[in-house]
Length: 107
Length: 118
Image (cartoon, rainbow over all chains, first blue to last red; front, side, top):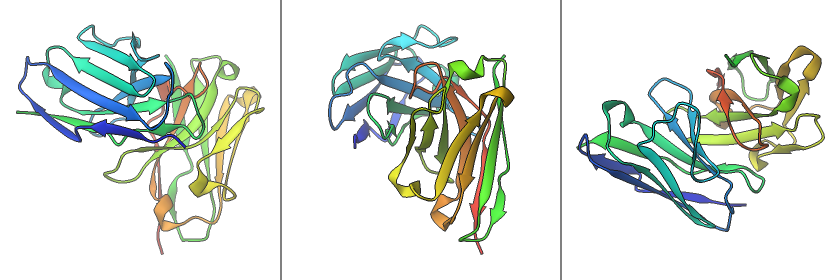
């Protein structure tokens, strides 16, 4: 069973600044890593898949990188709507798994 | 526009059963692997169960194995989750989710709340 560890659990950043979110897998997931964004009271939505491919309607300020066991989501210039929760997820092995989430809050 | 609409949630006593349904529209349903993902109040996301497009591959998280059964009816564009022997720890918002790549969650419903309590 693969465990995904996201860090930090909470990230305080000023609007317009850059945010770096990390996701570490307990074993290699290859390129089968996705990121989801969840706004309060809403269902999550797919943000990024295949590590670095932006999903439909994902702004260009979001970028993903990494491979194997270490992955990063970068938001280059935080907008007000970006201060929400982000989850990584691996889809290489069953059981499928999510990380515990990173909440991005306003500094 | 893709729509996934869950139904069937509610308040149920421990040990009882509940069946969730998900009606899909705006997509070619049998192109998609389908899943149930849950979120306990104030907590993170947990994958519960998944089923491939032709029901040939089915999986469950360990905590629900032997109690939950996933199924789909491609003729009705519908996904189901039969939940038996419910426990308080099953209390959560249950999302119906579909993905073109099996295991990836492209589209999400708004969720159906299941509360297990006496």
